[in-house]
Amino acid sequence: MDWFWWVLIAFWTGGFAWFAETGRTALRNRHRRRMEIMQEAKAERLALEAAKRPPEPVCGCTHHLAKHDRNGRCHERVEVPTAWDEHKQPLRYEPGQCNCQQYVGPQPLSQVYAEELTDLA
Image 1: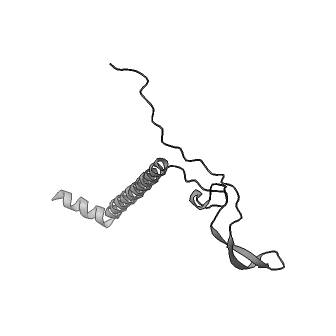
Image 2: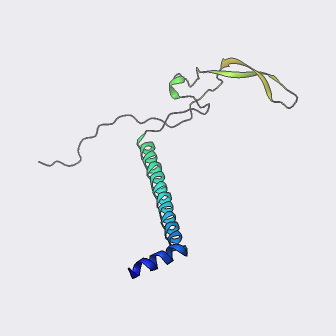
Image 3: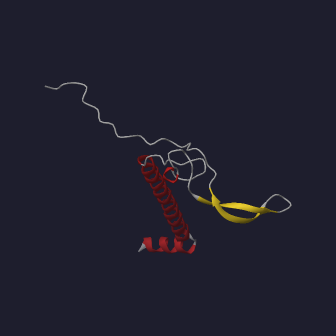
């Protein structure tokens, strides 16, 4: 029964509060570290997915290569400003043809078949 009095004295002096606060702090730190690990894993997964995708053939006008003909002319409809204010900011827009003339993005690679270099037979 001697230990009971020591526990009771520790309870009265706030020893259990210190113990509980230490536990809460440890759990809070553990949660923060686990959230950081999950965010890093998500960023790594997104980076791997982005690395597996081929580059998008995008023109300087931000339209896809499929919107351009063989001569490089873009066939996408865009908003063209028709009226400006005193600070040369557009006020009104009308639909119009994209003025892009040339595709400047990455060229997609074609499929190539190559024979083996060495004869294993």
